[in-house]
Image (cartoon, rainbow, N blue to C red; front, side, top):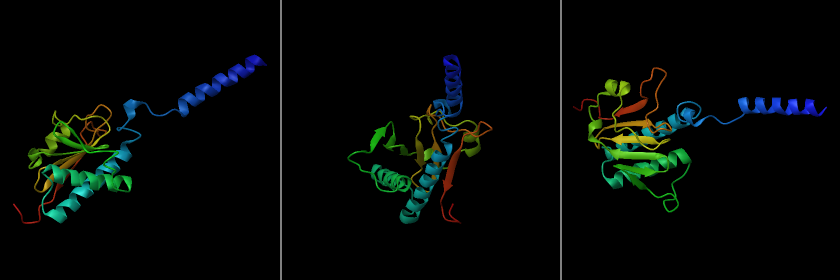
Length: 173
């Protein structure tokens, strides 16, 4: 009887470990959690569009970048950030609030989008699990999500997934 119970426990352990464990870190951001990050990226793009509607340009100064970070944070988390508990910090040229990063990057204007989809810029490496927003300070932005290794998420064809926003009014050069 003791042998039968041991076999049942071993089988239950095998079933549990193959069916019920959390996804491996290698799948973080690319697989199971990609929907969460893509939803956050959509909120980031919406915040950039709203900022442009209100200011007729995209953020460029530290104050403007921080304003967008707080708006995106509020949209994703259902309320404004507690900047005492979660202050805005700096990472290289980025302003950072929780899982959000933003920076002024004039190279976004007239970006070679198709080239970047196949081969993203080398400087698109950030801490893993971040939603990244790049603003040209005028009317164009790009946002993307970083996987656990800090590189942009890729689609099934191994191409970089990112959103490009070009917000100049029709007829504007």
